Amino acid sequence: MTAAPRPAASLPLGGVDLSCRFGPLTLPHPVMTASGCFAYGQKFAPFMDLRQLAGLSTKGISPRPRPGNPLPRICETAAGMLNSIGLENVGAEAFLSEKLPFLADLGVSVWVNFFGEDADEYVQCARMLDAGHQRGIDVLEMNISCPNIKKGGIEFGTVPEVAHALTKRCVEATRIPIVVKLSPNAADLPAMAQAVADAGAMGVSLINTITGMAIDVRTRRPRLATTYGGLSGAAIKPIALRMIHQVHRAVPELPICGMGGVGSGEDALELLMAGASCVQVGTANFARPGGALEIRDELRALMAELGIARVAEVIGCVEPLPPEPAWAPAPPDAEASR
Ligand code: SIN
Image (tube, rainbow, N blue to C red):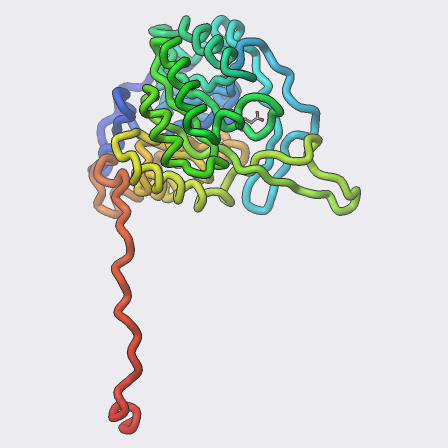
């Protein structure tokens, strides 16, 4: 499938300039699509003009293809979704030859999510994907946060020293900037962010899913073949906000790509105000396959309504509530005169 012709650069609408920066990257607006929720892009072409996205992050790529976990591996929950895909992907070689040309042709920011089952595989994958340098890959999004595989992923996502060493090796293995997708399971997320920044990461993505479970009470069995999976969607937005806020306050110079329950322009604005420089839409794509661009339009309309002219004005702008005046009992005279 080939992509439609790129539209002319759009002028700020409604007095709002949605363009923004993520480290050295300039994006036309802050709304991307998230890894694992947008495959390799092509499947969403019937639903939206992909060229209008700020960018997209691919399904996680490993050095060799992976079949993923047994079915069922997705299940809807009251306010989100559980998944245990198991990092199914076509592998780095097939990605570069079969998927990247389509993505490169879109002219949007292409982030390739990648991982390995051990440190050497991470480095190998970064090295293989380096072939996409100046061939369309803008960022390698290093996933150290997948909850669904027995080896790799999560093991690197919780110990700052381990994350630092792995990031450093991957940064040295490629000319493409690395953004590290951190695990919400880390006990000290600011320490993790600082560790990967010190190792040369250009930024961080947060948050990935949070481990959960669903049970079919009729069969008395879990709804996922692997029993546990990663919870995403509206249910995790407050957790994402808290974590983005904490990391932004601790490491303010480190760009954050925020994700976790972004389903509206207002959700996107909340993540920006918490400290994200751009956002990724994930689970919402399953219900509204063209939703990311609607979210961009909602964000623009909301910014116009609130008198916000530029995205940079709001990144990390949230202030604590002012202290409430202390409660004091009404004076006795006032009581008596009622
Ligand atoms: C999966 O493929 O199991 C999900 C990937 C992730 O959560 O990082």
